[in-house]
Image (tube, rainbow, N blue to C red):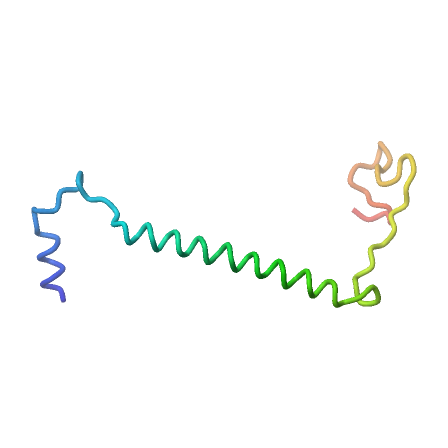
Length: 87
């Protein structure tokens, strides 16, 4: 094994200017890209079905955020302080 590696390294017939990727590498790259896109598409479809099957009782409820002027902005003299007084 080491003799083969040494022979390849010692070979002067490989010109770095003419070495190019093979068409097989391009085909494998396109295949992997298509497989990734199909897997993502399938994942999105599955997650939509799961969300639809949960029903309104099992969906996480979003807390209603209070609305109005100055809500969430904080006082000008207290930067970074939240509504409950924590930072």
